[in-house]
Length: 237
Image 1: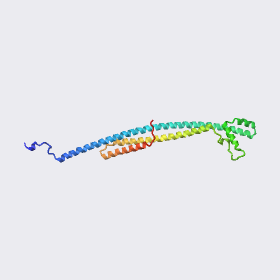
Image 2: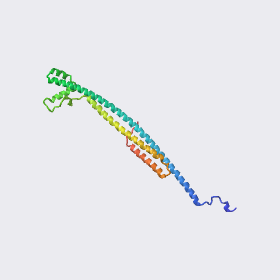
Image 3: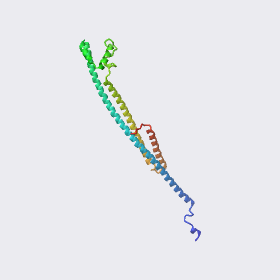
Image 4: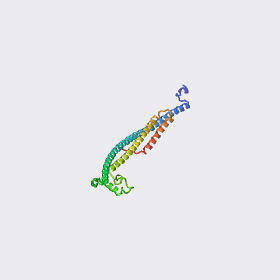
């Protein structure tokens, strides 16, 4: 038996064939490591985007609840302002009727009736009438037209109506602010949902460039959304 027959199979295989096999195995190992890194980073981005989406939805719900609360308070304040304004109008109408009767008694020189009516003037009307008479309206053309335009004529119901109207304005403004913040968080929820899409499809393509681009785009949108969210007011419940 000669030496050629004793030789092991493949012992004299060409070195070029062995290096080609090694290159194929090396490339497969690199592809496998690349896929694992893509999957790992994608999982991290998906987890962060999921948390961010849930947080924005939670904040939107809280601010939406505040909006409803403020609008209810504004409606209540508006109703009470209307009630107080109606009461003030009734009081003014009664005072005006009483004052007209008193002025008519004065003009007809019915002093007894005039004194009777004057004694029954409510304190607000009496104070305003005295201040108005002090301006000598019959001789002074620049005098106020009636006691009802005097600063001394102050009705509690009118002040109450103004206070409730101011409260309603404040509540409406707070409701609008809460509504705007809730809408912004809804928009951020949509933005983070797009991150879930980009990170979810990363690694599904045959091209490394496309996989990296999808993952980078998702990460960029995620960071931008988080930066924007940090500028919004937040609630803890």
